[in-house]
Amino acid sequence: MDSTHKIITAQDFVQKRQDLLRQKIVFTNGCFDLLHAGHVDYLEKARSLGDLLVVGVNSDSSVRRIKPGLDRPVNAQADRARVLAGLGCVDQVIIFWEDTPYSLIEKVRPHILVKGGDWPVERIVGRDIVQGHGGEVRSIPLTPGYSTTGILDRVILAAQDE
Image (cartoon, rainbow, N blue to C red; front, side, top):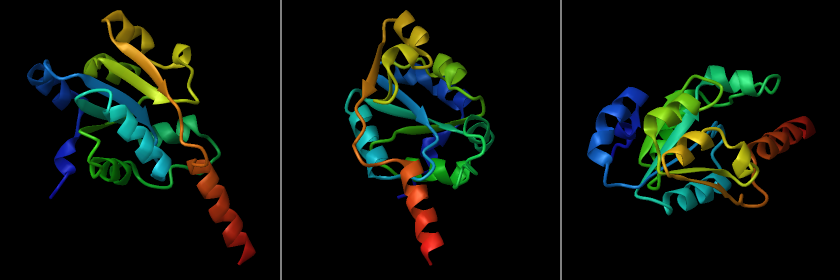
């Protein structure tokens, strides 16, 4: 089974959105650099809120701008998108090049916008768009003990011990 068909452009999504009018669209976004169990738990919870989960993935250039000095991303945007597309809970993956997904959210027009619990609802980018057309914005609690930065820190420490 090939899941690469789930990776589309924003323009492709806009064209097919008319066919999705009866589906409740959920949107989230992130770097998803080193996918871990916390990400999977979060994405499954997001998907349970609607009929279709669209995941916006920061491009490599946007990751470098929003995480300067961290030597990120570890994985290239195409690889990060491919791994996300392989998850059963993810229906569409769209790479975006801006620092925030604001313009992508305008195009997707989700019914529900979600971010992880480290983002208070009032700070979630695109909240005004989604609430402006009657949608919901939610912050989903994170699974304790999982973070990409934490994983990278452990890898670096392990490499230094060798």
